[in-house]
Image (cartoon, rainbow, N blue to C red):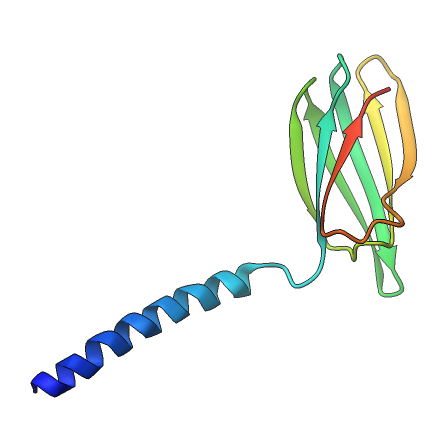
Length: 115
């Protein structure tokens, strides 16, 4: 009985640790990229709209109200390096449109926004 306990307890602990690690790994997106938008302007950003796609589909993403100095991280179901279209609408009616990060193949990116 004592030998069974000496074997079972370490096996149980190892299995628990491996299970937690596997669960964490499975919850991570297999593709995509994290993009942080930072409002470096003195006015509120009313909306940021993203359009991106590939041969298999097209996606749109909308985030609202980003205060001056605030940051917001978004997860895009999009492969890095393909670029994506960004449309920013500032309080007061100013707009800004651009294609972002086409040559950048990093999974974690930051985009500073200012008029």
